[in-house]
Image (tube, rainbow, N blue to C red; front, side, top):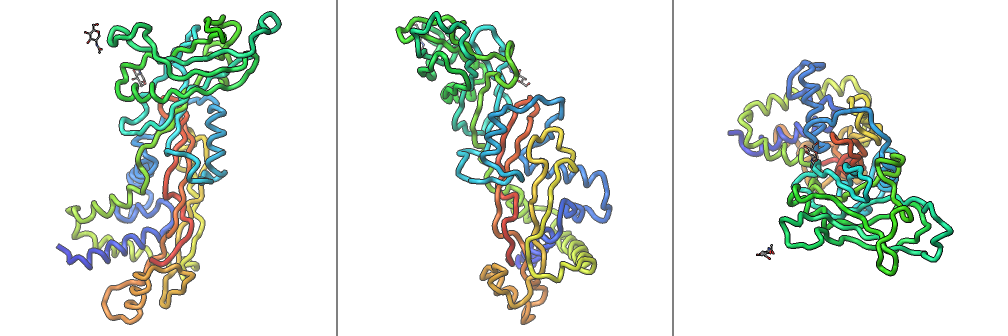
Length: 392
Ligand SMILES: *[C@@H]1O[C@H](CO)[C@@H](O)[C@H](O)[C@H]1NC(C)=O
Ligand SMILES: *[C@@H]1O[C@H](CO)[C@@H](O)[C@H](O)[C@H]1NC(C)=O
């Protein structure tokens, strides 16, 4: 067993070296010298997918146009670079849109929610229907409003329900209006998440104010079957997958002590140290004080542009530079870093490096993408962009 302080130092050295190196290249170090190895590349891409909460990249296909609602939502929560504008705008971290699978002539809809993780917390679910302008105008002018009700279809053989449906949402809508109408159907989606087999779909009923069912020619909604793709019925689901802090970081720390490869740690540290000193001799900026520098993550270069709608890439930034004694307040040092730099300057204890230049504020980014089932998903990822750097 390594003595604990030594372990901590070698870990710190590793973390320091990692943060000092831009781009994905840092993943090369633990694997040795082969810099362009295909194996390392695929391992690196796999790790990057994990950061984005996926096991495999969605299959890029000839995609349709994403729903305007999802594009608008993305532009509301994110700037052009994908960085979250306001962290309190979205309640959860995932929004999905689903298209109707039934494509029925009736006003019935069914959505396949199989891509939603079992552990995800359903916050809100909405049915978005596009109401078309009514065809018969003059004849029925005495009606101004109609009552539109959305029902969850139930299996009447399993439950003691006479009608076989449950009212989810009901609203008065002007008969001659046209445009999107949104109904809350959270209850139904929660029950479908518990039992996928109970998902028999939704039914919409339109009644006059007197309560009689109205002719569906008078009040019409666009269907996936007969109308333009941009007006398709859609289910929009807001969830939270519970992934909030960087899982990678905590994984690294908790994995390390249990790892049987412990004796290799010092040599891994050495390898990265030499890589770092190589960097230093080549790179003029190494002598500059700790600062934030650009690091553009290009999704096209990574090969993900086939399924990511937005952004094309983002500036993650990276922290680089030295943290020499004495650390000024502009280095945003922690007390611990200040003491470490003093100990390093005094050379009281061997092997104590100067503190590391690392991100000390992180921002989230948003991704709009197509999943394997061609649903459009908006997902927010925490701690993706270095907002500022400091000596830690
Ligand atoms: C939903 O989609 C999944 C994946 O394509 C499929 O396996 C499943 O059978 C679908 N469920 C229904 C009810 O169509
Ligand atoms: C359904 O009704 C039957 C007979 O009316 C009754 O025995 C049964 O307990 C009811 N089941 C539920 C779930 O209420």
